[in-house]
Length: 111
Length: 111
Image 1 (cartoon, rainbow over the protein chains, first blue to last red):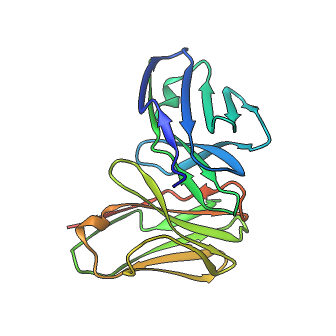
Image 2: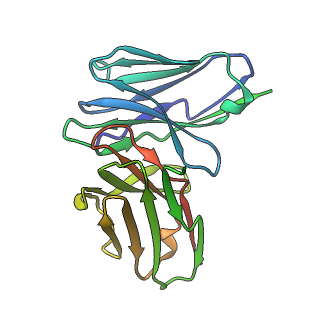
């Protein structure tokens, strides 16, 4: 199975601090995506990093990808209370559109 | 404006009933998906359709039958509902293996 694993399962920080979440996966990928899910809502796409990329930025988000270690990290800088949500990584295999999700990290940002 | 919409948002029903969930996307995507999110927030793909053709069919009981009348719609019909079917069901769409956009989810409760 290509199921991703996220680490930590839960993270609680103060507003203004940085939050780092990690994701590991098992097989070769085309790309890796990060999604956010607010409580009771659908998933919102944050960022996609392709297998030939090592780092990508989008606003306060920074994603890294190490295909040799089959791992990725999501860094949220200068966190805000509104960043409180579950964060999931998702990978797709080399054969197409199937996404396999990790178990998610629950981030709580305290005001 | 809504990109991926699902109806209903909430569905409460008795064991043994048959129910349907509808999904529509107005993004012009060629691929649509159904995911199931369990109580531990684990997201698992159930089905995927590309241009109205079934391309992913995970190990899902055959009580679940997807139907895609056209590229913009993917409905999920569930026969003989069981307690274990209680979950949040998400529809998503993408342009083949590109970013997937998720609907708001349908919370199904089987009593």
